[in-house]
Image 1 (cartoon, rainbow, N blue to C red):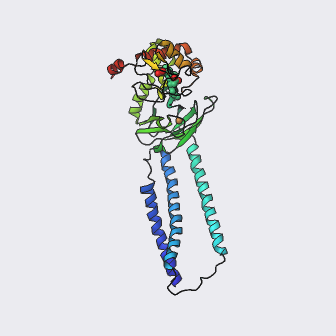
Image 2: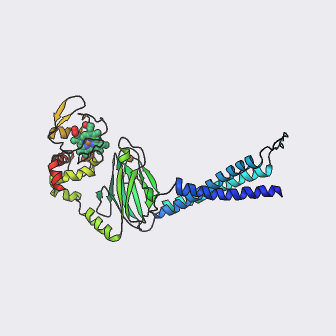
Image 3: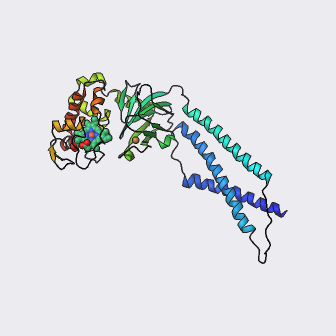
Length: 365
Ligand SMILES: [Cu+2]
C-alpha cells in the first residue's frame, strides 16, 4: 500500500512538471516567430511534439531522483545498509524497446514531413534566386525574366525557388517560413540549382537572411520578402515588368544602364550610393575626389582609375580596404552577359558613378 503511495506521488508530480516545463520551453525560452507559410504549421507541430517529449523525459528523471532524495533519506539512528540490487531484466527490456520504438516513430514521421516539403505543388510559380557576396538577386521567369533585389510573392500561392551561388556558399532563410536551404556555386545554373518550396500564407514584409557565414559582410546579407494579395502583386509585377529588358538596354543612356548594372552585377552588395560604409568604398562623391591608396600614394579618381578598379581591382587598393574582396572576374562576367562587352558595361558603370554626387542625390529626394 505504501509502495503505491510513492508511485502515485511520482506519477502526479511527473505529469505536473511535464506541463510546467513544456510551458516554460514553449512560451518563455523558445518562442517561435509568426507562422507565415503553410510549411510552418507542419514544422511547428513536429517541434511541439519534441518539446512535449523533452519536457516529459526531463521531468521523469528529475522527479524520481529528487523524490527519492527527500522521501527515502536516511532516518536518524538508521545505520543499516540498503538492499543490494543487481539489475532488473524486465525494466531493462522496457527501457530499450520503448525509446527505440519512439526514435523509429519519429524517423518515420519526419520522413513523411520532409517528403511533403519537397513534393512539387500544383500551380507553383518558379523564381530564380542568386546569392553572392553580399547581395541577393531574384529573377522572375514569368515576368520576362526581369530581375530585382526584392522577393515578391503572391499570398497563398506555392513557389519553387531555383537557387545558386556565384562565389561561396550562402543559405536562404526566412524564419517566419521555417524552411531553409543552402545554395552552392554551380557549373551551370540552367541545370544545377538548389530547390526550395513553400507557400506563403501571410501578407506582409519579411526579412531574408543569409544563414551561412560567407565573409566580411555576411551579417548584412539581407533582402526584403514581400508577400502580397492579388491586387498589390499585379501592381508590383507591372513595375518589375517595366524595368528594362536586354532588348531595351540599347535605347537607354549610359547612366541609366550603369544603374541597371549596379544591381544586376551585385555592386550594391558592397558599394553604397549614400555614403554608408559597406565592404567597399561608397560611390557617393567618388568621381573627381582624391583617393588615398593602401600603398600610401594618392590618385585623383578619373575615368582611367575607375576603369582599372572595376576590371582589375587588385591593381590599386583603396586605403582602409582589403585586396581580393571585390570579385576579380567582372571582365568575364560582363563579356558573358549577353549584351555589349566588358568595355561597354564598364563605361556605363563609370557614367553612373559620375552621377552619384550630393547634388544629384539631394535633387532626387
Ligand atoms: Cu551569404
